Length: 404
Image (cartoon, rainbow, N blue to C red; front, side):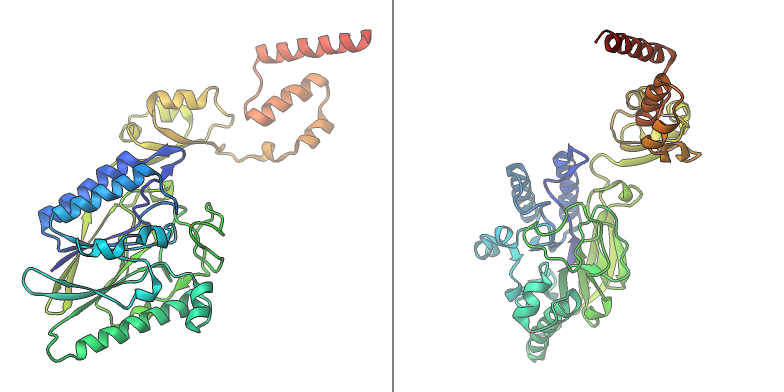
């Protein structure tokens, strides 16, 4: 049996104001091609299917088409909800969809009801889908401390109880245990692309700052999953191995410039004789890639060393002492997809650290004050022509004041 572990599709997400739907379509087409070419039996999608609780219509259409394509390629789907999803909305129609081979696990009360898969050669696996668990609500309902680790331990206890009962059946035969979960595993490497799932309340995309970075309060030790054959994690966007068979697939696309060096894809999980026998990476280089550049503007525009970044989404930092004139316009003449521009002088910003109130007190003349303001705000000194215009405006203002 061959399983494909993926997560964090975030369908409908934008990147610095730029829509990513076509890039998402391209990479999901590559995922479907992997299913078809490798003969995948089931796709495991570990949460954050959508980017927000109320996804736009075109995001819903893309998910619908992708699920249909996966089924047409011969694989079933087991899908859970993440902290970006609305569990209720994502889970709508789950009972009907199960009959077509798309299995939704968005209800915490059903996490111990596995999807029983059988491979082409008779291998069997019990796939348990643990959706994102909100600890404040479930801690009280389950009678455990309202924090991520106790709640996840209780969820896994329920999974083990069901699994042990199934394996105790003398007629059951070998049965591999596969668990999907959406969480921050202790020791995982996060990025600015993930929303914090610390101890703050979070429900249906509300209750926390959506721009917050990943914190530490919500981390769950990997030991919670000891003894399970494979744990398919979602939430962190970098593909990584937490233990031999506890892994993050990462997101199929980079969703922050902090992810620009990551190789994106998923994991192919091999199952035989009731156990996981191997895991291999599969890469999907779909969509426009990212680049992070820094240096003096002349070097950025003139060096052949940066040719590789010309067709990528770019974050660029100009290190000239003064902000170059028309810097962004000039950079886009070579890198048309610049999304983030920064000016950070190589020598630091000692002059910028002076407050405007200090500059006001120290200015020897009105002209020095106004040209100093231009320099302070624009990070580039006023030109001779600009200084002359300011001087002319000041003279006119003084004359008008004298006549008043």
